[in-house]
Length: 80
Image 1 (cartoon, rainbow, N blue to C red):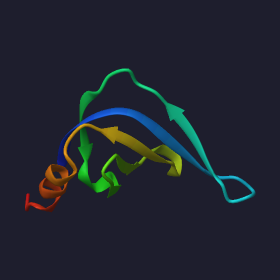
Image 2 (cartoon, rainbow, N blue to C red; image 1 turned 90 degrees about the horizontal axis):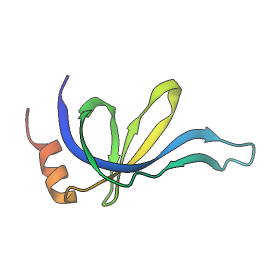
Image 3 (cartoon, rainbow, N blue to C red; image 1 turned 30 degrees about the horizontal axis):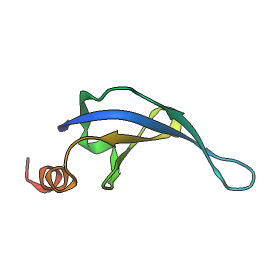
Image 4 (cartoon, rainbow, N blue to C red; image 1 turned 120 degrees about the vertical axis):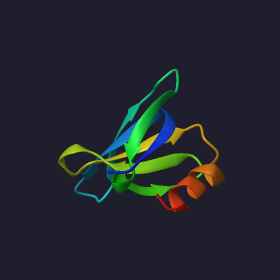
């Protein structure tokens, strides 16, 4: 399994959708960022602010990250 090291902070857990098709999010605030290894196979998308990964029981998690978007993109695009 391949990993990427990221500095992650606050996050939102997506628990799915309600009866009105509105995403149910649980916001978790962190006062500081910390380094984590994330399995590349779990990454679903990357924006300038969030990295979206799959989570337990079919949930998704949106992580805030400190790295530069272009650096993350380059790392993910480079052959392993």
